[in-house]
Length: 103
Image (cartoon, rainbow, N blue to C red; front, side, top):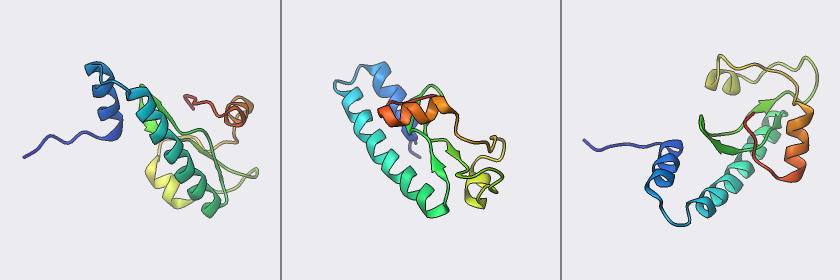
């Protein structure tokens, strides 16, 4: 058997080990993750938040694009416990600025 680390675990291990250039590498991954999240959101007719790397892992929040829009099944199944609510103004502003966030 091998040891399997997922992206958030690889990121944390690289930071802990002091891997040179880890911030630049994660920034590149976040850019590609944002592109993928935006493509998924556009395909589903919803909104993507900001793809980010934080203590909980590497990911992106998704939001309805209109009030009372049902959550797409693929999103709901991926995070059954998460809330399906409109994008907070703070996230919208951070997205305009191109900054990562914790939501």
